[in-house]
Length: 278
Image (cartoon, rainbow, N blue to C red; front, side):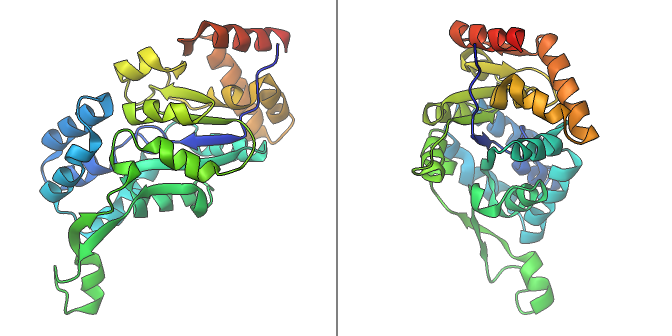
């Protein structure tokens, strides 16, 4: 029994590739972390629509452009276990990797490029700054001190919008697609791909865990490799550089410890059968 190759792999960013939520980083700097985190959690759990709180959170925090740019450092410092290596391994195996995020575009794009993902395959939310805020008359300070004014309202600022972006990025490309993420917005976007994988390594959202066809319940992203490429992917990685050999061994070990669970019996049977046959 063969497990299919998913050529297109879409990642959520916050709480999937990195262990932080960018908006919470901004909120902490403003002394509003607890209140903003509650709103973020409610949106990720599906209790609030993201569109209802997106502008509310940013207006409460009123970040400067420099504070927004600084999120990229938090993203890198709190990168999820094996995230960078998994992205490069997937690309070395011929997968096309994307990021679709409800986070802010500047830090998400820079983080994605740092991971080796082409800018044209990264989508996040743009924001506009108040050109007359801060020391606007001083050119050096003006760019850093400009404060948040508004955001680009669109598919990524509503809970049920990521599916549209997936379809736009796929266009008329051929090949199966997979999306991995932690939130309900990712779960809803699962209808636009061939396989949705829930990720609980940072935050376990009960709705995602209970409804995702496949769920990864460990910090490492290594188990995504056999889900995206099957046992063949692990075999190919074992013939590559030492870092990929170690990653392949780790992925196989984690699979055998039961960190990947299924809410779809057919998928589970197919996946287990592929591994037993390998």
